[in-house]
Image (cartoon, rainbow over all chains, first blue to last red; front, side):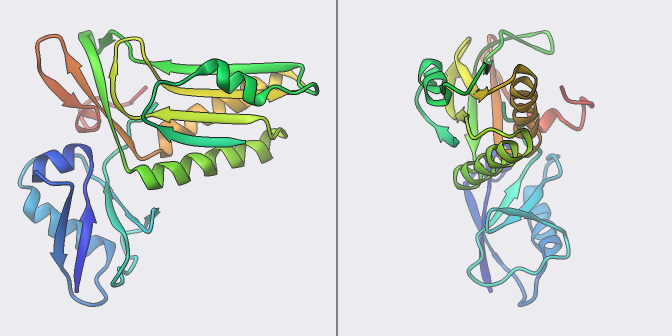
Length: 78
Length: 145
């Protein structure tokens, strides 16, 4: 399945895009998304969390077709 | 109660008016603004990036939790994103409550939760023309304020 992953801040800069499309096996997990992105990033970036449908999920969470998936670098609001 | 991610300047007078009520003996306004120094380096501005839809939902959750925890519905929070200049407000929180203690506590709680949970990122612009994401420095500069 193809999953679009939203990118922000340093991750968007490093990959030169606001999103990337990943080909993942059915049943892929949040950890699979992060390792696929790590392979593309190729630079030292802060460890992100993953959000699915606008909530942070644990690394074992399954990704389903149609999910809104986003990389959440360490936040720095305020 | 209300929470919003905004791209326009924050109007603190409007926030104070929004939480005004005859029952409130105390009103606390917290604002966060772009500071001129970051780790000793001179800053000319900050660009704020956000996962806007999630940030809006998360800020609403934070404000709703605080209304339940501190016992007032008179809570408003706004976080601005986009390009901000020195001194401009990035965040403002207004709390109205019958008593000052919970009003201060609620405002403090909300800004601390924003710092922990809101998917917003700042890129500092320095006087020498360079820029840096604050998130990219977190590994090297623990603990974060």
